[in-house]
Amino acid sequence: MKMKEAYEKLQESFMQFEGEESWKEYLRFSARFHEYSLNNTALIYVQNPDARYVKGYRAWQKLGRQVKKGEKAIKIFAPVSQKVKDKDGEESWSVSGFRVINVFDLAQTEGNDDELPLIVTGLKSDMDYSNLLKKILEGIDISVSFDDMSYAQHGKYAIKEKHILFNSRNNPLHSLKTLFHELAHHFHLDACKEKRNKLSMDMEEFVAESSAYLVCAQLAIDTGAYSIPYLKSWLDDFKAFQDMRRDIEKTTKKILALIPQEAFEDQKFIQEVI
Image 1 (cartoon, rainbow, N blue to C red):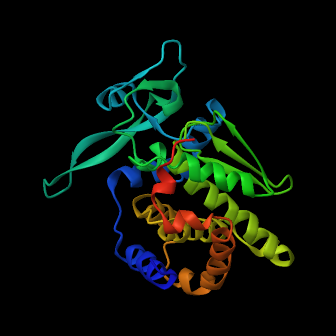
Image 2: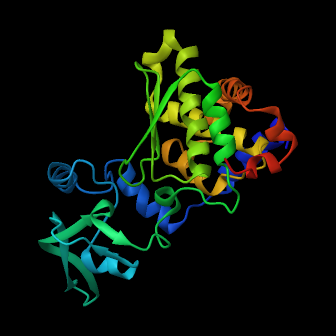
C-alpha cells in the first residue's frame, strides 16, 4: 500500500469511527477514570495507583475471569436510585444517595482473556512477527528491555534515557506495533527539541500512533481496530490530521528506513521462525 493510500485510509477510518462499547468502557479508565467523580478517582488512585480496568466481582466472572484469592477490593461510591413522582404523577428515577461497592482491577484477576477489550489484549495474528521484530531491534541504536508491566500498558519510551520498555505480556505483533509507536516518540521528540515544552501529550500520542499505523500499513498489517479508537481517545478532531500531517509523515519515513527491505518484498520473511 502506498503511503498516500494508507494516509487516506487512516483519515477515512478516523472520520467514520463511532466507537464500540468495550472501547468506550476501557477509555473511561485509561485516562485516569475521567468519567468518574473526583471522589471516586481519588479513591481508586489512593487504593491502587496502577489500576487501569476495574469491575465488580461478579462482572469479572461473567467475563470468564476470577478475582485472585487474597486480593484486596478497591472501594468506590455507587449511586442509589429510587423512583419519584412529579406533580403530574409521572415517574422517573432519581439519585437518593450513595453506597460503597467493591471493584477489582484486571491485574487482580486471572482466567480467560477472550472477552477483554482489544486495547488490553493487544493486536493478534496467526502470522509470526518474531523474526521481523528481532531484526529491527538489532538495527536500532536505542536500548530496549522487556518487563512484566500491568495490563493495558504495552510499552513506554523514557525520553532522558532514550530507552524503550516493552510489556513482556505482548505477543510479537503487538510488540512490533508498540516498537513503531515508541520509535515515533523518539524521532518526533528529537526533531522537536526546541518546541518540546509546547507539545501536549495528546498531540504526541496522536503523532506516535498515526505513525505506527502508517508503518504497519506498509507491511500489510492493518492496525485500525486498535489504532483508530486510540487516536480518537486523544484527539477527536479531524483538523488534527491537517495540523500534524507533516510531523507524522516525517516520523513515519524515519521508522520505515529501519525496516529490512526484504520485509516489504517477501511476506515469508515475516513468518520465519527464529
